[in-house]
Length: 180
Image (cartoon, rainbow, N blue to C red; front, side, top):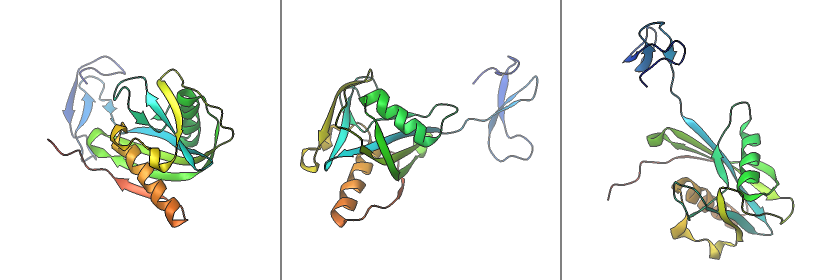
């Protein structure tokens, strides 16, 4: 950040009084600009024992599979955002069951919140950001083609819970990927 969004003046990094973190502070009007994590919301939607995945039609990770999810918008709840993203990416209308995973992805300043959901009908189609949408049973999941580690973690938790016969909430801290 180079300029203040309030007055257009230059900003510099410093620790404001009463704070403990470096912030972008306007050198002219003193406005403090807080940069906070982005929230990603979505669903793990099921139909008759299968889960719905979308093949990405946009970068990043074009052509790989993911759960329908995306950035939350201003003025919506996490549940509203998860339903909106599922409709935008898969033209599907699920019913939310519960918050299933909350994944801290601190190395990219994101929080991923995935709801377990039940499709109301098996009617779905690829939205503008998807190339394809399909239902998969556990044996068919294309594990090597899952776009994001948070989505793979959510799928693993789902199948482990289902095998145990009891679903629970999963808070996860996702470490940075290993270099290599």
